[in-house]
Image 1: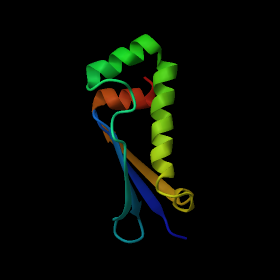
Image 2: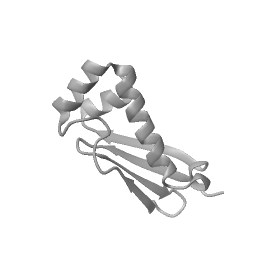
Image 3: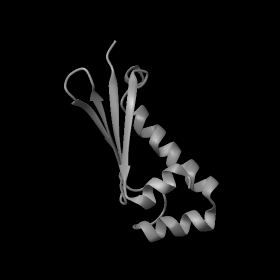
Image 4: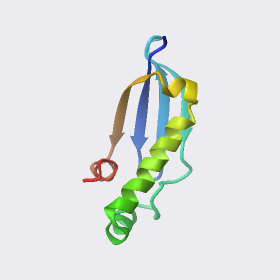
Length: 100
């Protein structure tokens, strides 16, 4: 069975993910990208404002749905074999992802 990893970048202007073959020296198999950040606005202050006015439940649900959609874009047959996920982003984006 093939083992995959996923790299997820939570950027200010959008999210990006790579599906990586862990058995073939980290070969990137596919990439999925959002066309913009899932929360309304063009910058971190806009994202925080939305989060604070709409509530963390709403904001976190939007972010998790986006991450789920990115993962699904790599194909359901691959998703079942993801063994490791690495997530990066600035501290605010990571805090929104972690709902803290």
